[in-house]
Image (cartoon, rainbow, N blue to C red; front, side):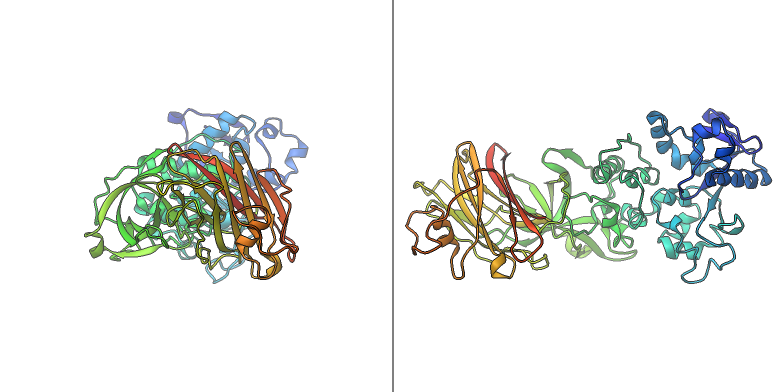
Length: 552
């Protein structure tokens, strides 16, 4: 560990067992910070920096409090060394917790104001919005706050009510109690509205709070880093509140950001059931054992849906346990997808006792796509498509979405098939993307033609996505229906189907211009476009064609 001498301003190295008493600084970074390299050969230019003045003031206060050494992140870490930076980040929580005192410098808070007043400058300080400062508030036993002029304005203890109102952190944890007393969901909620300069740091700054360690991989992205953090947490914890989050984005069983826990600060880990479950990771998803409450069974119009009951309750003393909605896969046994991520569900403890407990896999998506999307559906479960084609009822769309509406699907085959030769489709919401898949279980999908109609509420913004797959070649086309023209008429005008078009007018024959597996189409009355892509995926040895429609 490297510390700065509060008298000489020289940096000194210490082995863990020989670290002297020290003060530690918490602050928000500014443009003119003094780095490790600059402090080695400190000249007049460095001394004029605002960051140097911050170091000087901290050292003077620490020295007056009887400390010969201090730790300041700007100059005590050589950030040009990736190994040293990684070690420092993994050790940060411990360094703050073992400090004798933590000085918090609030550059945007005048010391003359009342920090306890409603809407005070203190409660609105930028310091409370930064990711790294969360652990810097919780870990040290003694925290003293200083205003912009370096005059003391209070301590963590004296300002506890204002801090609790601002952060949501429990009093006993704020004043030194173990963070293990709070559920994972509660701890995540404390970080829900915080930000970091580098997106990965939002996950890395939480490692100490959950007592996990992992390598730093800058460039992996914030979502991937947060997924890795949750996976590390699950290796040492059986607290199922980690799955109790809400978001408008689908990701699977794990959230993609602490922001998903913004409404989960009230959730407590339950002690009414033994916490002896383990989680495993596989290419099928996360394996978990849950009591399953049946919501709907599979038939021609609906999917097999459940509320998987988590071992946590809605609030302290509550008898209502938290449930998440899961949909069973039509392709793989015991594989489920999380849906309706915008809300959690209540299941009374008395009801849970009578539910069947199942060991299931919940798929976790790691894909991240830029831009706004339509709302995602995956066609699985529900009616069968046979050789002579079948129309799906309209209404399989998200009523809360931005307006894109699924109106119908038609499958066409160029040759007859036996009744046992079934082609499945299914439909359930899994996030911010509109996605359809067509599968022929037990054989390779070598020839498929289909049409899917969408509408935005205006006739000119309606469109039909047509798919054509012959052996190794797949292409898609977009057609615009005329007023009163049916989905089948549009498909027939492109030469799809068995009978001739009804009319000889404009829609009687259209050209299939696109021979690619992706296509961009501009919406006539909007400044937005539709990106349609198709891909082939293999599920349990079965070939599936997936069509994805994005609003870009």
